[in-house]
Every structure is written in C-alpha cells, then in structure tokens.
Image (cartoon, rainbow, N blue to C red; front, side):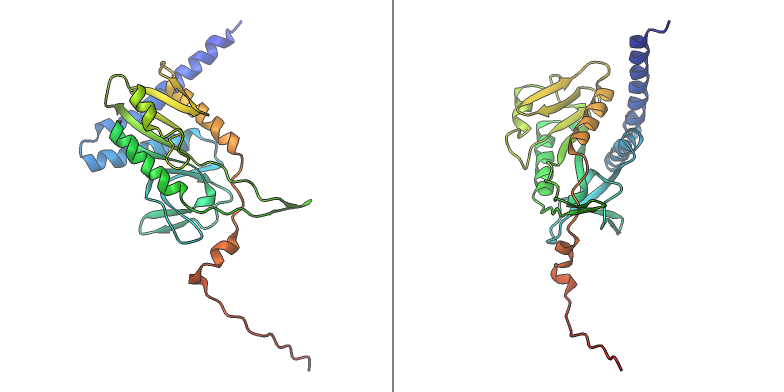
Length: 252
C-alpha cells in the first residue's frame, strides 16, 4: 500500500527542486543589466509555468482611463480572457488597471532600500483609477464587481542580512498603508512571507518556494475575476473627441 503522505511530500520536494533550478540560473549572468533582465525573465517564466492559464504574466506599465500610468513594473499578472486594451508599443506592454490581479518588483536582494523602492512602485500602481461596470448575462445584468486590492510583492535571489525577517523588515512593509503595502515576497535563500490582515506569515523550511506559489494562488482565488472594464470611461478621454450630427432619412 502506498503511503499517500510520503508520496505527496516527495511530489512537493521534487517540484521545489525544479522551481529552484528554474530560478537560480539567473546567478550565471554577470553583467548587472543582463542579470536583472534574466532574473525578471526567470520569474516571469516561473509564474507562466505554475500559474493557471487564466492568468497572463508580463513586464508592463499599467494605464487608466484618465491617461495616467504606473512606473514600469517588473512583473504584472493580469486577466488572460477579459483584458481589453492591452497594447504593445516600442517593446513595452501596456495593461489597463482594471485587468491587474498582482504585480511584483524583482531585485537582486531583499534589503531595506529595495523594500522602499518596491513600496513606491506599489503606490504608482494603486494610485490609478479603476472602473467597474455591469456585466451582461443570459439572466440580465449583474451589478458592477467591487474593486479588489491589487496584490504587490517583492522577489529576490538573496537577502542582504542573515536574519531577513526582523523587526525592521516588518516595519518597512507598510502594512497599515493601503497604497504602499507589500502583501508578499519571496527570497530564494531566505524564505517567503505573506501579510494576513495585520500579521505576517513566514515560511523558511525546505519547501518554502512551492508554499509561496500555492499560497499566492490562494490569494488570487480570493479575488475571483477582475471587474468588467467600463469602456465608456476610456472613450470619454479627450483624445477621442467626437461630433454629433442629425441623421436625415430620405424615404422617397
């Protein structure tokens, strides 16, 4: 008889090893720019491989109906099916704010400086205006979906100190600030964390990477589906100036 607990443990352990191999290849890149780009691409591929296919992952800038935009973000996870108005321009992907589930900043290490930097990126994203409109169904219109909190986190290969999760680290996460709060993060040599209400949950055991992915998917499940974009809000932008004229129908 197969020991199901041991089988599950072995499956998780093997998957953890594959995940680390996928991500640790970034340490082979020596030029700082190449290293940064490679780390971002490694994490993007990681999410593409392990997230359900309903989610799209890309380096992107997020825009809103009023013409504002976020800073460029290393990783944006957005809706695969209902993401209207996704554009490519000069190699940059632009995504509407309504379609975003989560975003991450990728850094070589987790340090106080980089946590502050990630918090500012989070503020630039969460400051954008999001719309929500009725959803047509076979049974009539559904009420507009309430706007969810966009998840924002930090990802890194290493920590700048031996005790990553100390008191100073907790204070830097801006837990009580809606705009700058970091909800989660993962460090390949230090473990991962998630904010749950006003508490922080930490995993530093040998399977923390797969824990991070499962726990992140759980947070995405809480969001459900992104709100339906009010396209009229985008069409009302002055760049789409229109004129009306009377319609004359000749019945002769």
